[in-house]
Amino acid sequence: MSGIEVWANWLTVIGGILALLLYIYPKVRKWAIRRGVMYWHWKLLLSQEPDLERVIVGSNAVQKRAWYLGQRLSFKLIKWIIPASDYVMIVSYSQAVDNELNTKSTGILYSPTLDSDPLIRDLATFVDAREAGVFEQNFTKRHKGVVCASENCQVKYGERRNDHDFLCNDGINLSGGWFCPTESRENLGDSCFPKAVGPHYCGLCLKEMGEISPQPIDFHFDRRF
Image 1 (cartoon, one colour):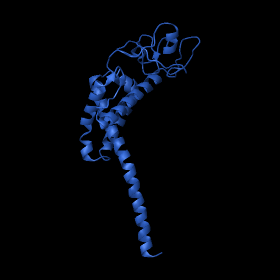
Image 2: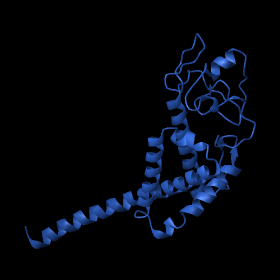
Image 3: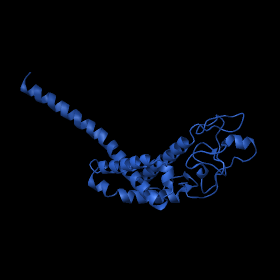
Image 4: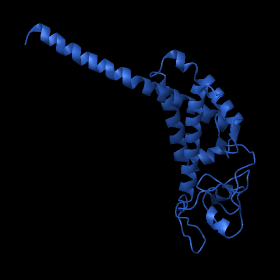
């Protein structure tokens, strides 16, 4: 093989690597910015509402330390992934996202509008989904083994019946319309800290029992509860 052919092969390999990096890096950068905004979102949220620590990281001391360590390490990592111009904007992005979520949410539902900045809308949608996912995961873990107390239901907590597709006016939490025994609009599921207690009913069974009516959410409260 001649020297020209060797160089041509190397140039082909290098070109392929560069093309791959150009394709992958925007996705990595997007992930890093989202992760940085999420970090500051959690930090601000916990500083304002310390009780949310129970919902986010649970009551186990080891789990809390691991969660905080993971948050700090991931934020340190993104400093080496994204340009400095993006890194210094993360706090500003986070503030804009919190404002977006607070001003364009109905109840717990984020409803973006066309006048929203596309970048902030994308980040807010990610943060909203991630926040809901973390809360949902912790609610479900706390209710492991709980089933609907209705004799004809017996569906497991966190699961939904096939015809379970409505939003309730009172007692709704993030687990598909499930109700803790003494839920309120202000403290969804607090009756089950640090573990699930008492009989639980899925929303559909309470509807069938005549205790609730399926209505759209029309009240306003802090969307993070």
